[in-house]
Image 1 (tube, rainbow, N blue to C red):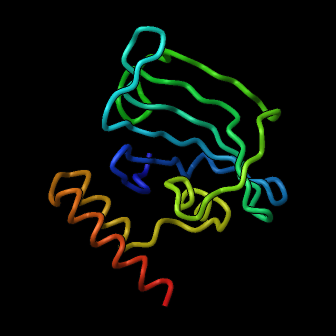
Image 2 (image 1 turned 180 degrees about the horizontal axis):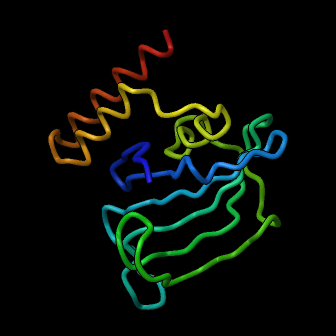
Length: 146
């Protein structure tokens, strides 16, 4: 799994090796690690493993599978599983949301830009703080919009 983004609530990862394209639809496996654990069925859920379909043409997403997991980074035992298959509801993807970066990467077929990949690696190895990571990430993303 590759770290894609960080927020106050969670870290989001995706597995680029699992991206599958069918026309304008891209599917990918993601993992979300919660900073504050949630509870399901009387047990702590530390992360989720999620299969998402993205409609690259219309900027929509559909959750096809969601499992609350006992360990971080989408690992461990599944505690709570929701399997929607291809019948899940299609929703508009918010460009300011955590999953938007996964949408952009899955639909473009490109890898995480090297400056962001390097920054993510430093954060994962605890070489920089979360606040430093967020400041540097935001500064880099602003350069892309200019």
